[in-house]
Length: 147
Image (tube, rainbow, N blue to C red):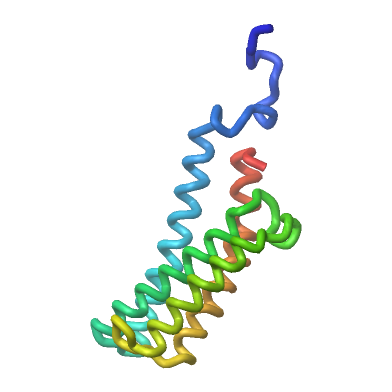
């Protein structure tokens, strides 16, 4: 039996055959996280007036929270709430990652300390970012026929 794609619709092809569309989706997701991170750092610098040491801590926290947001936003092609529940290992690793980062930044261990209200504001922003990205992701994936 030979494998041909003459009578196969594009939506039935494996993802590995549509690398161009997956690359575009990845660029969209990466640019979205970049915008989130730059926005948080710009807010910290221009609105709050953080110095360089505090901005370095903020960059660390923003990357940790942004990467967790991205992880949950891209685990499924559809909506976050319609996807299967995350595994215990994913939840535990997320709690460990966020918890250790927030403790380090809040206590000022290995970095300049930031107030807890500010750290939790970044976390809340990342949670919001997750749901906004999820809305945009479904639309972008639909246009690229990745769903």
